[in-house]
Image (cartoon, rainbow, N blue to C red; front, side, top):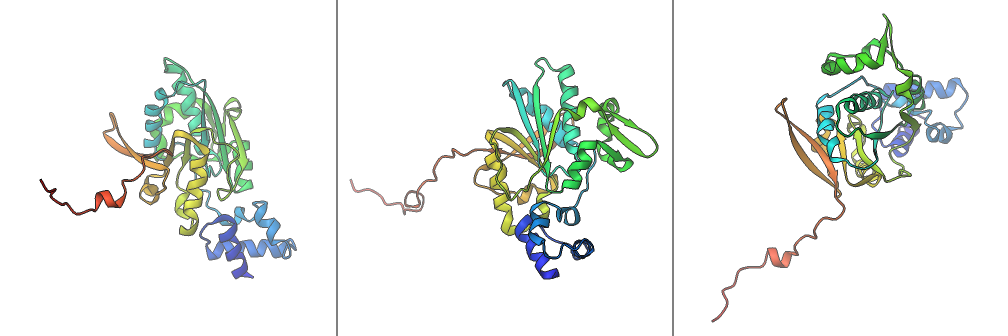
Amino acid sequence: MIETLCRMAETSYGIKTDSDNIERLLNHILSVNNNNSFDRIFTSGEAAAFLTVNETYFFREPLHFFLLKELLPSFDQSVIRICSAATSCGCEAYSIAMFLETYNTIAERPLSYQIDAFDINPNAIETACKGVFNQRSLRDDGSCFSHIYDMYLKRNDYNVYVDQNLKKTINFFVHNLLNEFKTDYYDIIFFRNAFIYFLPDYRDRVLTNLSNALKENGFLITGISETAGVKHRHLEQRIRRLLPQMEDVFFFQKNTYKKPAVPDYFTNAPYEKSAV
């Protein structure tokens, strides 16, 4: 039965599975007498609650938010659409919303925005919708933006609460990255620290679905440790030197209209001196 669960986790979610997590899932199935309902457990996302990693906190990898500040002035449409893919419990999506709200208070041209955020784990999405987190959601990694989240987060000794108005700016939903999106209008997709969990045979499929969901010339922002592993025919790597941080940050831009490659018979043909 464990082998069956491992195989279904791979084909349903495309992710690596930990033996302890598989055993927890099996115990859950047996405890609720669902041993004959494997398909439903995986298609509903119920199994994902046992198999996925939900590590998340506010303003994780802050360089990407400095990058977002650099990219925003290039958008002149009425609404900028951003997606937080594999958002876990939603701290990333809330961080984007807080950043945009603050950006609009100082920008010459404030931006209207729409944020979609999804995860395969329905329990994580339920937590995201509630907007209540433990103290580990605030860490030193994102403390350079404490002046922002102090305006939108309330705290006590145990929990962190997201401002009610901020929650209204985000559309949370359950989605499997192995499935196609129903839209292709995102200007920016954040897909950070999740790609590493996908098995190599499924990575191109995930990147294709993300690329298809982007507008032409839209941006894909991946985790800092994941950049080298992202290779896709429609995603071109970009680099930006951030000032005053003086650090380089890598990201990707969609380009489906690349110039055709020069045929080999031009590039590899031996040089012959013409007769005169």
